[in-house]
Length: 374
Ligand SMILES: CNc1nc2c(CC[C@H]3O[C@H](OC)[C@H](OC)[C@@H](OC)[C@@H]3OC)c3nc(N)[nH]c(=O)c3cc2[nH]1
Image 1 (tube, rainbow, N blue to C red):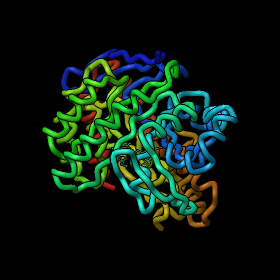
Image 2 (cartoon, rainbow, N blue to C red):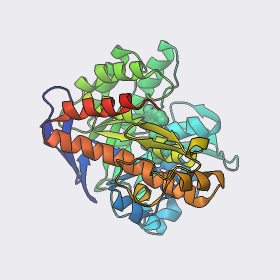
Image 3 (tube, protein in one colour):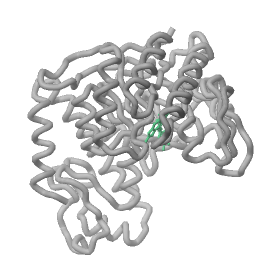
Image 4 (cartoon, rainbow, N blue to C red):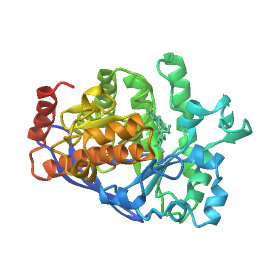
């Protein structure tokens, strides 16, 4: 029996946006929510205390990475991933399929699962629905994802259909593989590429199996934003209203606002953390590339409208200096600011939905960017 619930608290009058609350065995999660990515048991450059200070409610871990290094049994023997990384709030782990395809070498996919060579030392491994669930349970994640194939884009309709059907069979095996009494919630992942009928077929199969939540996979794989939104438009209305919807790997601030408008509850993306390490900062008026010469002696904070620790204490000149000097603190401060921006954006969305003014919030979001084309 999982201790997982989802309550729909409010819906927006002018869109499909919704305000919700998840209850997990490690605490509440207010939605819509952005989940910082913590691939190898750390949200890069962030102390857990700093993550809490900026309001992170749940973070992500990666089955593929932790399975290969340091190993899920080692982490289990040390008390699980929460203890290992000193994070006592919820953790969601991906099932590893995507990473095998984006990182693994010489991989071979068949009905059993995926055989691949580690990108670290070339050693051979197999990930299957059963082993992926076992790894995620050993890590102790509070929300675990079904083992699937994230279909590359573009792909032939025939391949999309075959892969989606296989991911459906894998989803059924994942549900059967769960340990009874493990309090984690298992989410199914909808595939189907960019084909509405194959997406609908995938939804129907997952609904028949039954999951605590539903992810839309196979997006943010290089398609145009318009196509991403079209798939959301076709797929989200088919999912149960009383279950969380999670779009994987999404996205830019605009993607989050558009996804919320279409009824998405959960998002994850490496964008705020990866861009931080590359000196690209998110602000209410667009992106700032801190390495640009114009910031050399700029005394202003990154975003004068931002209330974060970084904007309260450091100038653009200093952040540019750190980046140019390749200082470790550059990644720390830039990541702190970018995650504060992403989490703050979603806090603003939740407040707007609570106040019945999401439409105004969305207009204001775009107006601020239009006034300052970066
Ligand atoms: C970017 N576009 C993107 N990312 C997709 C991820 C991975 C999400 C994953 O993306 C990184 O792994 C590479 C993150 O680590 C760097 C992971 O956080 C731990 C995150 O796990 C939820 C997908 N995962 C599955 N299982 N199925 C998908 O269809 C899928 C689609 C994605 N599109």
